[in-house]
Length: 504
Ligand code: NAD
Image 1 (tube, protein in one colour):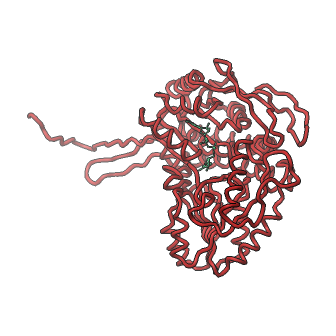
Image 2 (cartoon, protein in one colour; image 1 turned 180 degrees about the vertical axis):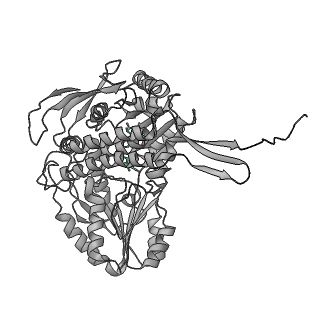
Image 3 (cartoon, rainbow, N blue to C red; image 1 turned 90 degrees about the horizontal axis):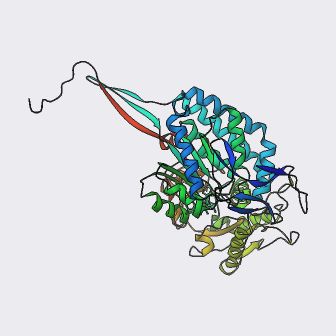
């Protein structure tokens, strides 16, 4: 990377910001073979602060060749789990030690409030520690079969894992894939999102310092249709872990079919937050605000459809909207900020257009566009629409910004029907004091994850993933170990072998 100090203009600019972001292949920072670059914007001033190398097929070919060589002839896949775990723990130490720097770069690149970016950096470290512990604690299952056999399952790393990630909380989401892929002995090529390439390069230095052999981690920046597409289609990449939009996931699914790759897909969402009249109202309001306005609403599990029982509907809407109007929107580097700038002008335009659509589809209770005190940058005031019908676009479509739709329901059956009335099925949040109702609802709601009287917290041992258009497969805990390993069954016969004597 090339570093230079950039003078602050309208807002805080971190020291020593790179002016050019490169790939990292076989232990070296390099540019694209053809010299292509793309511009990287900061979401507060919307000016180009850097260029990034734009990877093409030939750059992906080099990265995959390096990863393949490190897999076939390098030490990493053959290391004992304990040896790999030692390096993973050093990586976690380094991420924790650099928490402040990571957070300020992530905030600068994404527009995420600084206090929330710090939490994401620590979570990235936790992911590495978690998988370090997991591979030491468990690996091969053995079973004695009655009679004369012992069978065991030999878990083997698969090869070069292609990791394709989105721009929301990029560093943390990259750690979700990197930690289990590396822990299990694979080598990787990471293609981060083009809107936010800044923090991914930090992995390269952290990994090198922690002792990860060259070629095990490779990074190619670039556009999805170029670098991402080449990675998905590469014959030497047997598995792809993808997080991003549902439509992109569908394209990747089709392109990965030619070589029949292993696929993990974490896709979009339009998750319901269902509040029954017997809920602890204050706690439900806290959670329903956090659920859609934290991380600027750029959160796959955002509870962006709030369904409220009619008996408390008016009170809920009034209190919720009053709190939404109090949310502090501003420069993401200011520790008081709760909602920062959206990641990119293109995304800002998309979210702003949904706000306009919402004005024709619901009753505007808060927000409704750019806050008056922020004439520049990608800022949208927390926006609340009530009385939204289930066929409204703002009820059905993922907005991925600080915009929420509230809809009333009369009874449990209607609540469930509304909750399931979407193509997505990522998360559901349920607020009630009635355990039987909560249990029945979670059995029937079409969602990969359910939070009862709780906001978005997850123990790393539990699976993360969606159903319907929200994804395929799960990440997290043992599910990640399953995804990143082949499970070869080995059958050993004890004593004399009694094989039927064909042809004797
Ligand atoms: P996106 O689909 O536009 O891009 C994601 C990544 O895919 C980027 O790196 C992009 O360059 C790459 N890509 C694009 N086209 C490609 C192609 N044809 N082949 C290969 N790669 C390609 O998504 P985004 O806008 O970056 O992220 C936001 C989306 O991600 C939202 O829908 C959100 O819900 C989803 N998301 C889901 C989860 C989850 O765990 N379910 C988590 C975070 C984000």
